[in-house]
Length: 248
Image (cartoon, rainbow, N blue to C red; front, side):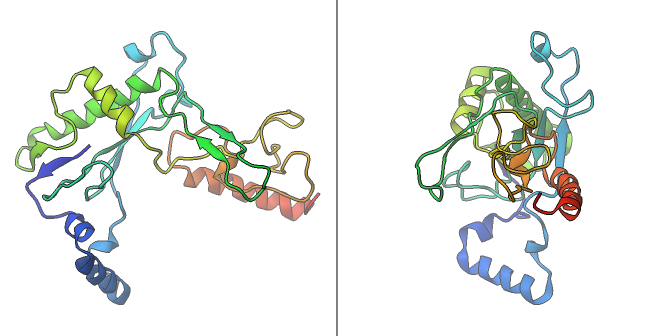
């Protein structure tokens, strides 16, 4: 989602101007200063639905625990052509993500050639629960920009009107949703001896010798967080296994 704002403090100008972008990159390479010292998004907010939320009344809670997030808000300091086409002003984005999704995607072999890429269907919104969870995150973002502190900053919405109905919000989400940072599970771990999954709990590829996968694809579920820390944890554990057992 994006709003036109009363500020030039964003990456929008560099996104549209290749010369300016090159100058900013040269400044960063020379002095480690300038706009590129910022990450894409250095602010975020985790959102956890309350236990009495009507969204969770008739379905199991998909999050990992009582304080685990269902969705998050990210605050990039510039627009994206995917979400805001043809914008000429300064229009930072609030990206809304479902971090405890109920839907699961599919990985299907597309060829007998082992080097040919597979078909990957992320199956976004493939579970009914993910639709209202995303909608709830959108509503939180809309409420955020309507706070008094934003009154002199926000000029107008660009991508989705603040008065949009639930049906309009859902249609917008279906049209614009994409995976964001959390794509995992393409080589999912399963129980030892199980005839599904790609790796065993020791991260060795099933029915193969001498091959382990040590990366986010082995996670069978999306952590209700960014995946980097989770990868560090099992990578350290796997390093110990490799040192102890080698290729066995």
